[in-house]
Image (cartoon, rainbow, N blue to C red; front, top):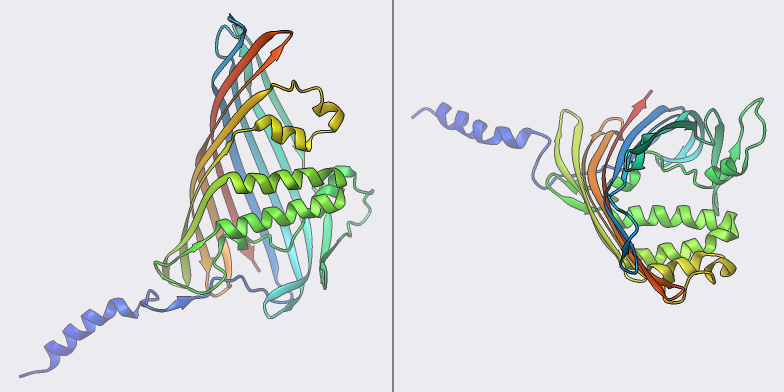
Length: 340
């Protein structure tokens, strides 16, 4: 009996195993850099926001005869070029970043009972056109504005510097250890770590931000948050990734939280019986492409929906004032990293 049919059949069964999706093979999706590398990072986002419902009463008198119109759209573009000046084991130790473009625009319509106003405003970010240098130190990162022939940064620019980080390549969305095709990892923990780092930097720069840091920690404890990444496939040198994000935040004592971060004199003006709460929910999904040869995430996109609702009640001169509002919106983000 000829062995050819058996060999052909065995080869056919083995072909799927010859792809990059070998069962049991773990893939390292950690960004790695090299000295002299040049990168261009461009991110675009669009967010839309609208008021769905609103009520307000003073005693039995309706203060809002109809739901006001509030429709807003926010757009933003950031583009940065990065020159990697030195690395250690594939991690950046020194880099120079130029903020080529930082632009933001807000447009929309607001009004009620036939009285509407259109608005259309745009502005540049505080670091637009600036070049900064980041150097790794024992205590973290030294960040210096090295822009030639430019004036000093204003307060918003100085604050923006405190948020600068070498982690500008969506590392927080990637797994910290090798993962197999079909495997998942937690994204939420790294996202919260990055948020905490930024708030800590801001609090160190501005003491007025310290109460805000405490509020953020409280919000984290009150939030149900799940963010997962999944390695879908590895083929042709490209790893394809999917992300899902679900979060729900319920604040039962809104005014108590506000009093903690407000100036004590201003907080004292809030009626003692003021009571209110807020709920926020968001669902997002996204996808990305990780170039295995370049060892970089080269594409990332996210889109989703969010909803916000709140209500409060307080008394003023013996009369109860009550109000509530519901709003919702969408958000979309697209980012690319070009490597030279």
